[in-house]
Length: 154
Image (cartoon, rainbow, N blue to C red; front, side, top):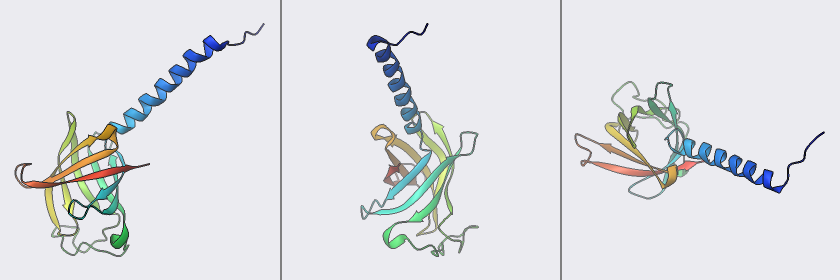
């Protein structure tokens, strides 16, 4: 004999399903892992799409997926770079390395500005329920730097 689920039985199941989906969405938003649109801190315009990944040990890195607008040139190279990235294609280039979670921030890594070729210490923090990522590049102390707010892409 089968028993049908009445209205009272469906509501708790729907509630549990909604809670599970919300927890899953929060877990994804609680980390910078994902795809981000960079916003230039000086012009306010979108500049590139960056993919941030976890190497499996909790260390994050990020690479350029593509440029946006005037920066969307697949043959652009990092002519100003002074390390092994000198004259390498910017598209596909790893520009963020060594980021590790430290409480609510990710720190301890470095970020490359492919326009200037300069390497900076880096700190990242999620905002707006994980939909925005504040990325700060700095020299010495975090007070001596610039921040950009990146927007999560779906």
